[in-house]
Length: 143
Image 1 (cartoon, rainbow, N blue to C red):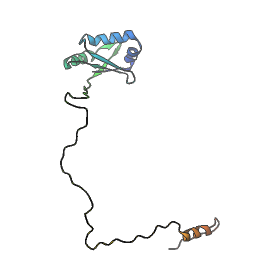
Image 2: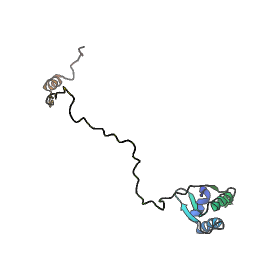
Image 3: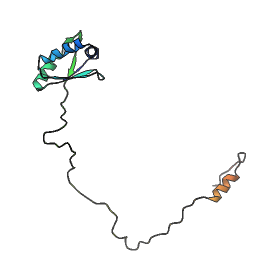
Image 4: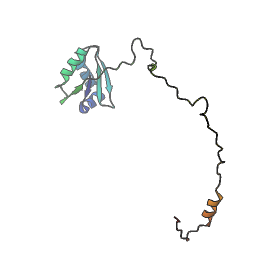
């Protein structure tokens, strides 16, 4: 169960007596409940051992006024980090289709390797044209 109301919870986080009063509301329902005071979220998460106790606590807090302000409450799902038989490792995905994508073993019939030309490191014609340009020259493109 998550309790949310920033006005009330500010007092609960800062004053120990208010925290004890707030906790007593829920320990009356179930003595083994656990409180997580989430100050940065301005919420309190209460973990009950039985779902019936959580339902009773939600019904109690729906219209309950604590220090003059009505509490907001909603259920949170319990997250189990590990199952009893789980070893904590990721499982392999199920094997379905396994296609190997690879090049053919030999080139097709009639294929010939072409000779590539050497890379052009410096184009002297382009450099000569750029060097000949000045700021005052007008340039017209030839089509």
